[in-house]
Length: 396
Ligand SMILES: Cc1ncc(COP(=O)(O)O)c(C=O)c1O
Image 1 (tube, protein in one colour):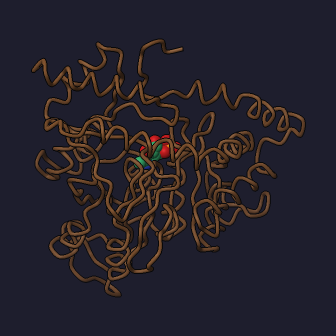
Image 2 (tube, protein in one colour):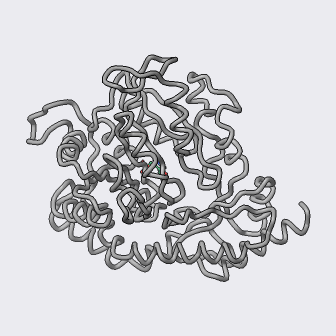
Image 3 (tube, helix red, strand yellow):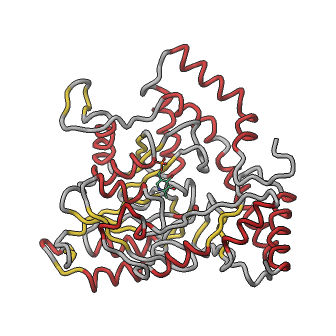
């Protein structure tokens, strides 16, 4: 299919291997004319909740819905402020704004690319004052900080012990953006056990966009929580604010997970542990092959972390040249993300400047996501790293 090319992501091979089972799901849904809700959605919700070690999973239309509905169900709304990081996909901050809150950023840790809890602590100390019921009030805007959204970027969980501790101290709700982190683990010293992404915060959001570690054949997402009341509210929000048909306790959204997508996801769920192992093995091979190349910084997997390598992201100062060189040699790498959110045009009104979040800015200029997917072969990886080696040697 790709001849000698090394694609960034190969979904075609994965789907051809699963074609028979996926077509059966479609046939079943057609036979039952059951496209919205029903057993396929409920089954998948049960399976995914068990996989994430949570009491509840609510199937939704996308990861963006999941972030937005989780914030809303936790009571975040008009006049609030929610903290996240600048180096994430815009869906994270769209959800904050669309829940009615305003956005605050704290910078990241330069080795894990995740929220730096020390910077979160500093945000409360320097930018906030104690407000009603001990809640932090953002001095400049007068808004009450009510929630934090750590992003488990590239498939590695953020330092949740520290973030949960600060959240408890300041009475914040925590929504994990686990859209890239299906099955990622983090060892909690506080609880003395491994925790799965989606089970630590008050709620969490997952995306099943086709290219994700668990991807639908279209748009899909889910939210997880251990709180029955939050799950119930999210179920109402996804269905026009109704728990009983045509009795609307509030306005909601049309944000339900399609039955066909849920069926596809159940087929793929069975393979997810093996796919995660394949990704981890591929990351280990890249680490070996890239060892000793001084120009390249390989990703750091924290010792308390089992990352699921949604992306394998290296850093180099000559990133754009390297990406172009690889593309000329049929090796396709990508950028996640080239512009940090505080410098996006959409957020010009927030008044941030270059230099506001220097670690995120430096990362945006230097990161490069190498090809990564479960079927990536050792010889494809050798070709990628050979390309990098030739680029460095040629002094391009
Ligand atoms: C970190 C992050 N947050 C949120 C989202 C939004 O998910 P979706 O595209 O399913 O709405 C994505 C996926 O694109 C993501 O990578």
